[in-house]
Length: 302
Image 1 (cartoon, rainbow, N blue to C red):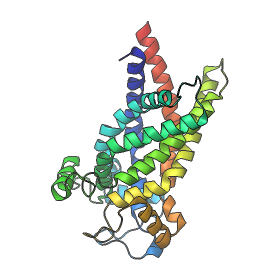
Image 2 (image 1 turned 90 degrees about the vertical axis):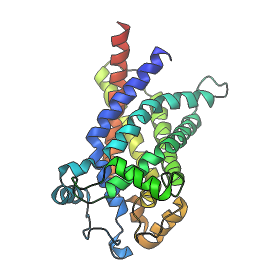
Image 3 (image 1 turned 30 degrees about the vertical axis):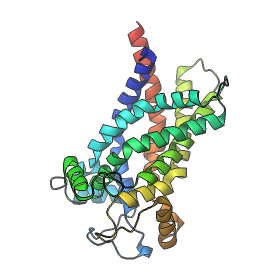
């Protein structure tokens, strides 16, 4: 492994760990909002506490009052375990896919960026899906944090009841592939396309602001484009409306069912906290990654 590759992985891993720990409550809020059915769709699912989140602030307030402050970090263990290495490897994966997709050309075209991003999304989804299933299950649990099951408890229960296949630990694999594929395709495509057109800056802070703006734009557009399938993934992997009966199975059928029963707006549930995490988070992430990478590179070269 070259020194440059090692620095890319280290920079990605360090910034990812910090981002996950700080921004995780937004992921919990997003998941809770996506799991609840719109009032027009019918009654609250059986076995679920009878209260309805009216928005991001209400969700945070309700979780804090009824479950405890630490409940906003439910599912953080599987997130840290998979998000840290994933983010560490994402930029490296993208660079490798980009080189393969050049097909002998000297410079990459926008189509190369988008296709390489799609490949990154599919790759990470296959690896991440079991962790995503466990994470969603932990986040969906509304019991106080001291009574909530541990990551290991949830993992054992899923495997013992349903096994490792698509009905068990890997439930929702196809929806994860589509959601992550779309997100990374748009994110890397927009980010690299805009960054490639960025002119050199003598002022480092001005360059940093531009990079953050590009990261924000890429994360925002990617979140909007992939949100319907992210909602589908959450519904498939989370608790079903009627215990013991699988209502949501395939991603396309789930999207169609949600649209038919809850209308278009339901497919964009959890978008605001997702934008705050993926949009604002991407802006901070690329800035922190760029700074950390340059710090590590300069530090080790001295």
